[in-house]
Amino acid sequence: MSFARDASRAVRSTIVLWVITAIIYPFVMIAFGQILFPSQANGSLIKNAQGNVVGSALIGQPFTSDRYFNSRPSTTSYSTADPKKDDAEILKTGVSGASNLAPSNPALLERIKGKNDPNPSKRIEGDLNRLKSAGVLPTADLVYTSGSSLDPHITPEAAKAQIARVAKTRELQPNQLETLIQQNTDGRFLGIFGEPGINVFKLNLALDALKPAS
Image 1 (tube, helix red, strand yellow):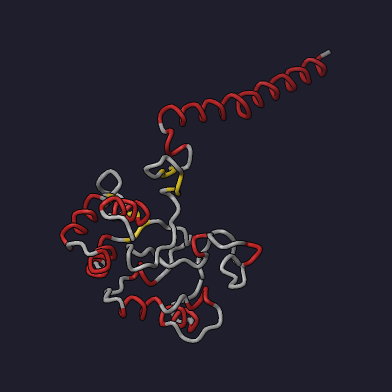
Image 2 (cartoon, rainbow, N blue to C red; image 1 turned 30 degrees about the vertical axis):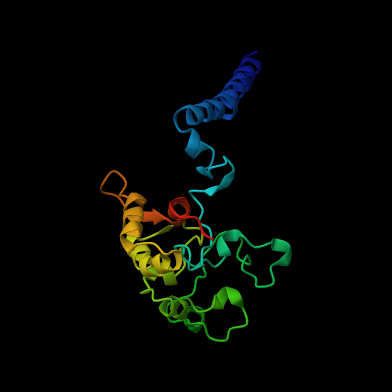
């Protein structure tokens, strides 16, 4: 009888713990997130003026046009490539990941300086030369990819370096763009952690709201 009683207790305890940890706790956390942090719990989605989802504040998007503030280069093109037509192999490492190229690796200089590399994912039209030809003083985050290649942020310095180009292309005053950058700069977490950053996607949406791209 002792063995049967102990086995019954063990089974009941297992069932109770399973219900608590596998059912009750997850649903409580889901409800907690939906009530207190609905935006974050649903992916920090960004909607346009028409109410359509156009992206997420957590994942960057590629911007290379002179009419927009450019984002950081990405080894996966921010995972926008079609896996079935990935001729450039930009998704070779998966939907996220760095190039893992050391500073001494010639392939890194080939991508930055735009040498005749047959692989566009390594060349990316020469980020350094492209920025210089556009009159943009290159900053590290406009040349080097992030660890995830999905980083949606650039530094305020990187945004300010692009003011002259965007202002000229959109026929705006530089001070208008300076104000826009200040309004879209995220400060340090709790005022002490991390560094100020600018979500490029949000900044460009605000830019379009200021003066739509033609």
